[in-house]
Image 1 (cartoon, helix red, strand yellow):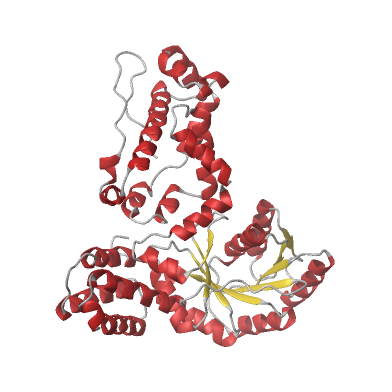
Image 2: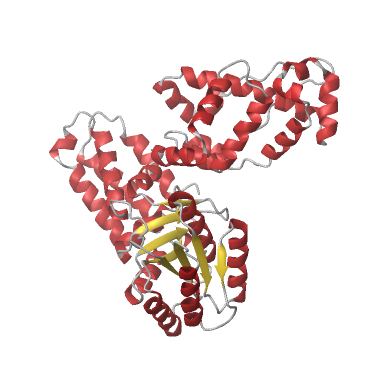
Length: 467
């Protein structure tokens, strides 16, 4: 999305940062840019007006206009106002002090509720080490029960269901089953409809009264923009939600819904998710989201992703290997496995300050290339994996490996080149100062390692894998 909230606000940041002085006219122009950014992102008009008025009032303060770096201070004001609108502090799940924790999920059909339940169950088990069970109480859509059972099976999470029966009966029996079998957390999937109606709301009220949930989480489709906030308010007014899961959202381009929901519905956003993969649920932190929207990265979330997926000693050993001349194909394969555990490359780069452009360049990467590389490496002998120079020196080895992997010799040669590029890139990163990192963020291609020189005859290289 070229004109996304993120893109336009990042343009504002670039224009503002570093300015030695600001006039009232400068601030008026900035506020016009910010106002347009927010309106194009489908943020509620009242919120836009309040936001720009608050920022302008603080930006016109004597402290900023006469400060040492007024541009950066205005950016800080914008960041803090974004954070305020989204809720200041993160709000976590509410667990029972003892016994079974009950989480009820509500939302319109098509909001991604059933998938969100799967993601939430995995998140709770992984982050809080609790034993989770699902209750399938969306009885108006048989496909929803089947979908939840499929998700539960893939995650190893038990799904309690009784087919198409009264939802209240299913929930009552499911809660009894969960207590008898010593589950820590139960997540109840309730009916989703295309529109909000009286029957739907009455059933949800009955289920809530019966279950007495610790948390009532509303799933909202971020692509609905400010309409998402109106849906959230309607549910909250009638049922009393305690938190929102904002689905179908990447933190960069769907900030508009996040800005509208909290302010209009007064429900805290607890989680965001994007895509179908079960490990894409993230706890919502207003300050981190504000930083991402402004293109400042999100190092805290990156650190959490790394520490939860990669062993510290494993990462340290890998870094030492990459910096040494002993880095080989076994190490490359381990590195790819580590990356895949964390998620997509574009997602990882999105957390790093200043690498937005590189993230855009890699957003369309076909990550199936990792699988192709793995097949090629598995076609090598143990000795060849340990000592890459054996393959470099022998065209017959390269031909044999290509045949075994079902690829072209050129693919094997590209893998050879990528190994060399990894070493070159790591050595460059290790020696970069802040100015060089800034230049790299503006023009990533200028810092790409040089390709290996082409050799005559068989096995000459035609470029590297595009990671």
